[in-house]
Amino acid sequence: MRIAHLADLHLGYRAYHRVNQRGMNVREADVAEAFRQAVARVIELRPDLVLVAGDVFHTVRPSNTAIADAFRQFSLMADRLPGVPIVVIAGNHDTPRSADTGNILNLFREIDGVRVVCDECRTLKLEELETSVWCEPHVASFTEDPPRREPDPSARHNLMMLHGILVGPRGAEKLTYISEYGGANIDESSIRWPEWDYIALGHHHSCQEIERNAWYAGGLERTSTNIWAEKEEKGFLVYDTEARQAEFHAVETRTMVDLPKISAREMTPAELDEAILRAVSRVEDGLRGKIVRLLAFDVPRGVVRELNHKRIRDWKAEAVHFHLDVRPPEIRRRAGSGAPVRRQTLREQVGGFLEHRWEIQDRRVERPRLVELGTRYVDRTTEEG
Image (cartoon, rainbow, N blue to C red; front, side, top):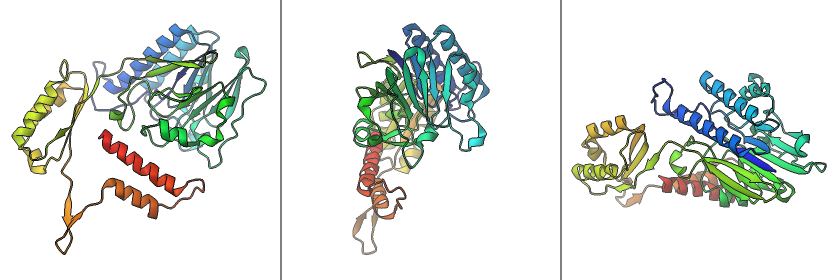
């Protein structure tokens, strides 16, 4: 059986206050276009089953435009793939905090062939495929006691679909950065990996193999809190349960350029201006239509004031988004005695807080492991800069 696995569509995502010719936010249009590409490609590939592992929308109350476009695309996929089930679960971005609010994903139940699970764990039996799909939306994973995830012994194929972040040795090794916060923690020890033909994961925005039969599909566009950590191609997976192999299918996305960092230590304003100009000039085909960042560190406030801000404003006008990320020098303070005292780094502050001040309420959390993960994430964030 061939399974198309999509996740983290984030339709309705907006950023940068730029609009296109139709008056639509440019980034919202980018995300919608990526989904249209993915739907067209899935239709060409003609899988036996389509799984969408959460975060269809970026907010629980998306715009009318985002809702209408999503409905059209799911309807198109269902129409062009007759008899192919489309199974969708809710992610953290799809799930309202109040249960009586209602989930917008329920709208897609009006489309023949689309099945939606929003509020609780549920096993969907797809008789035509001799397949059972364990569906675990965000809210069902967000509990102190993990659900009993058990395959169906009567099914030929047993699949699992989850939305959350894996906690355990696999997650620590494979998920090299946190792309999204607010997701449920999923204890790896509660998953009996070999008993499932495929485990479709959502929430992490980069395509990542966890086990041979378990993958994060990644997002279709860069919509996380730190898009600069999402340097890889975006797209979706098709998994073959017989061959036990996954194939990645990329979609075109907005060009993103993260320029090499500049160390401005002891630079004059004129020298830093020249270094910035050289860096920006290296962007192939110019800034137009691109998302660009340039990080300059060790820049005193007085130097920032004297930079060529008119030229920087021109770059911001030309690009979809140009971010000159200027970081000040590290601060050193002196104690009352006059002896130099180094200010604690962010890593040291986080480690100390987690080790001595954080009140652990979940008995499953081990403090040494908590401190290790917290400081590691700070290190990675600093490196990604």
